[in-house]
Amino acid sequence: MDAFKIFIVEDDVFYGEMLRHYLALNPDNEVHLFKTGEECLKNLYRAPAMISLDYSLPDMSGLDVMRQIKKEHSDIPVVIVSGQEDISTAVALLREGAYDYFVKDDDVKERLWNVLKKIRENVQLRSEISYLKEEIGRKYEFRNVIKGNSPTIKQIFGLIEKSIKTNISVSITGETGTGKELVAKAIHYNSKRAKKPFVAINVSAVPRDLIESEMFGHEKGAFTGAVTRKIGKFEQASGGTIFLDEIGEMDLNMQAKLLRVIQERELTRVGGNELINIDVRLIVATNRNLADEVQKGNFREDLYYRLLGLPIELPPLRYRGNDIILLAKYFVDEFCKENKMKKLSITESAQQKLMGYHFPGNVRELRAIIELAAVLTDTEQIDESHISFNSADAAGNLLMEESSLAEYTRKIISYYLQKYNNNVLLVAKKLEIGKSTIYRMIKEKQI
Amino acid sequence: MSQSNHSNYCLDKLIGFVGDDPEAIKNMVNLFLNTTPSLLNAIILSFKEGSSETLAKSAHTLKPTLDVFGIRDTYDLIRNIEQKAKRSELDETMDKQIKQLTTTLELVFQELKIDFQLS
Ligand SMILES: Nc1ncnc2c1ncn2[C@@H]1O[C@H](COP(=O)(O)OP(=O)(O)O)[C@@H](O)[C@H]1O
Ligand SMILES: [Mg+2]
Image (spheres, rainbow over the protein chains, first blue to last red):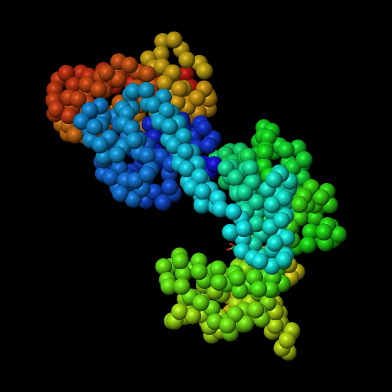
């Protein structure tokens, strides 16, 4: 769970500081102290889980502050902590939606603590409910979610079937957009762990020096910026499944730590020394050939074998034959349903055009192409004129036309940027060029 | 913690809030010593000037802090002062009460400074 954010609005310096200190004794709390109603309102975007509000503030009355809060964020519990021992004020505030009301000289401490506990339990309950809703949404069979009729996809259904019966680790390989994450979710939501969380981390998207804390959490004060305790993804996934996407991007140092956690089935948060048992199922994905990476010394062999488990290889879309059309039709139907549009059909010539394309971005790209086409057409048909591939053409046709070296360079970099979601650092690493070269080309609008 | 037994204050409530952490307690005591005198001055001044509203407000703000520092008789005093100020009864009794409050608080300031070796 993320830090439990609490706002204290209190103009009395001493009392405010004391409450702040008190509530921060629990390392899971992240406490913000404001001296005016205005300041509190300006910070509501930070989505506090609870607000402790002093009734008499210098700039506006507690009632006015609470009304403003309720207007935009009716679900944030507001607890009034007041010096006022006036029953009628209390009643009025409770009527207007205050979560609780207490006077500063009562047992503020105990009451605040109890209220906090109740609110926490509520927050937890609410997240469980929304989780259950999501789960019901996914309950249908994976064959209805993962579309495809080709022999390779059918083979993959067989592998998924096997993987959901046990806890075996699963390693999924395939180019970007082939459905790796979709398969990982399908396995989780059809397994015995379905009622527990599915938690994903994209290794390549998290900065190198934060990945450990992202995965295993950290204690308050573990490093500069660690102002509260943070529970890592492995702990969040407790009883469920953790999905490590782009595992091939993990550096060797982190690989060693991960291996230890998998072997020992326990972890310690960064900056902590408590050993925490973990019970998670592991699914990893990569668009690299991990065996090659092992050969090259970029990936630990022992970790590789630990993770391999049941390997599932997703073929590129271009090798799935008629699935291209099946998926295209499925995406049009979905898009029309979602946008309350009339059903659209795809003309024969548009289908031909799709079948002739190599889809470097695979299913994700197909979906984008189809959605754009559905928007472009003014009739009830998608024809070839609505289908455009310009996005990723650079790569497939790169060598078909003669160009200068500079032009090739430009095209290659554009292609990589597109393939890796404009992650300049990653592209620079892959192409073994300086990131400043890429930044310069972007700045000069060459790419 | 070196709390002398002649104390006019009691830190149990404060410890309840910030925990039994000498460093934190000292910080809070320091904060108390830095913020309370000006509130007390505001009370004295607004009484002299007859501005009952400011008086009531300052008393109101000071009240919980005195409670936390367990200065019981001052707590009843400040409550009384606030109530009367709200009714604009700035009379001789209140003058006496404010003087009594001032005396006790100054004593407490002294005690705290000695007990916590703050100057
Ligand atoms: N076989 C499939 N049937 C339906 N949708 C698919 C299929 N494969 C992929 N998708 C969709 O394509 C997009 C990309 O899939 P994703 O699982 O994120 O790919 P990857 O993780 O391999 O990059 C998602 O919107 C996903 O729902
Ligand atoms: Mg993905």
